[in-house]
Image 1: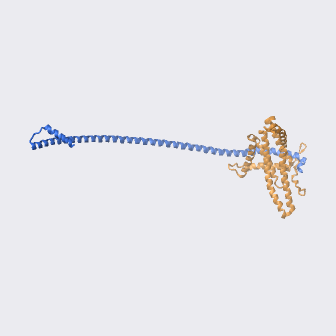
Image 2 (image 1 turned 45 degrees about the vertical axis):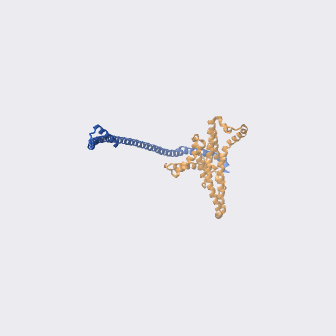
Image 3 (image 1 turned 90 degrees about the vertical axis):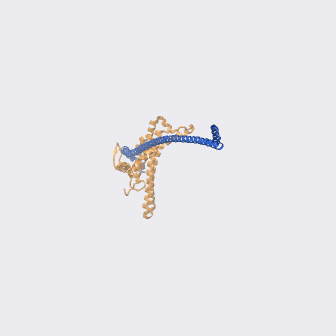
Length: 245
Length: 163
């Protein structure tokens, strides 16, 4: 890879590792797929190590697993209620998938699959369609009342309903763009700052190096927060579908 | 930007679906049951301990209640016994006092009777002596032999004055 372009966008290039074709479509196993696999293995390893000894007083790893479980479980229960616990495995998977995608992507020479809009958009669109189906399945045509909260005066409703409909359909866009933009901006910023370290040399390079250090910490925080935000918003949308108002 | 190269979309979506399903399986069949079991076990253990503590507390309360009851019974019995003993002693004391009182009263009455008897005997002998003396004195002084009844009456009057 050395000698190729080293622009800030080079880190997002999809590189096929194993060429595969499926029904005429190119489904090669790429660096993106590799890091998705690592996210699965990482999650499995975390919960395997954490629950290996099963002690009453948890070890550190067991504490991490328990805290994550109770954090996501609490998020689903608080935002969707007890009926929402049926979707707890899905939300938990979503959270772990994005969390590992974001955090693994911060390792040098790694790839961040959540920095690709197609991945985020697929997830967001799936949630949008699933939530809409759940909403109509549970409430029938009454689900349309989501666009007009009860007690809205008629003149206000003429303005409110189009806004509500628009905001409903913008959900998958905002959900996927938020994660995409955060990951993209963070990684570009890191790459650009790291480039300054090289160009300024050993003496003055210390300044952008300190900045890279700080931004890396910030990006760690962003990685966790964005995984949380994605899962939380999915919970809120799910709550609309299950409990309506 | 590599993000907008549609040639990579099919591959990314394909592996996203495969990976997400695999991760869902890991979470739903492996992570959640195992962690959930640990949390449930801990909650059960804590609940068991709390239940046992509550049961022990109930036992303690029952023991305290039994003790209090026994204590109250014993106190009641002791009071009854004491009261009976006091009453019995009082009765004995009363009986003895009454007997002694009767005896004393009788002795006082006897003594009073004998005193009265002695007094009247003494009075009688004083009268006799006084009568004799008066008659002797009168006969010696005047040589008259006075009527016995007259002397008697005078002596009686004099004695009455002396009293």
